[in-house]
Length: 187
Image 1 (cartoon, helix red, strand yellow):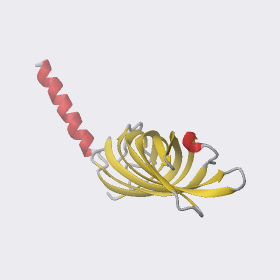
Image 2 (cartoon, one colour; image 1 turned 120 degrees about the vertical axis):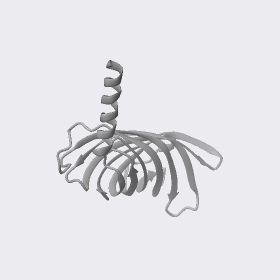
Image 3 (cartoon, one colour; image 1 turned 90 degrees about the vertical axis):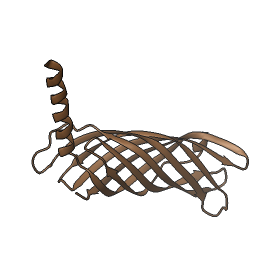
Image 4 (cartoon, helix red, strand yellow; image 1 turned 180 degrees about the vertical axis):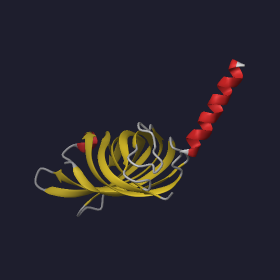
């Protein structure tokens, strides 16, 4: 009898959680600030830029997301300073942890999240034909606040291991990103 009661409670909780789910597509824009550490970041200043993200929520707790971002960085050489563009394309799985219960309008819900996936970065320096590419494991944390059922704001931190190659030399390091954005959920 206890086993049947336990299975019934688990079943009801699973059904209820999908009933409260924020399923569907979403799109957003964000402003990243990126720093490059290690050998890859030698003489490279932090940079800011813009980005777009999109994803699909399968339920209230799990989604798949992709984003594109671009930032500009000053690079100090011994005799001059150049501008480097850092473009990124990332794909990852995202787990949400709702802290507040949803009211009937699903307003003011706070949801911390963790994410993990793959990031692809490309650099290009103004006035030079050389560029470099790197793929690496990416993970991050953040928090999302729903202002309305369809609209949320978020802040996050992400780090990606990178290994750029230029002129046969490898430059290892990490790209660390802090971003703030807004997301529209097509519900």
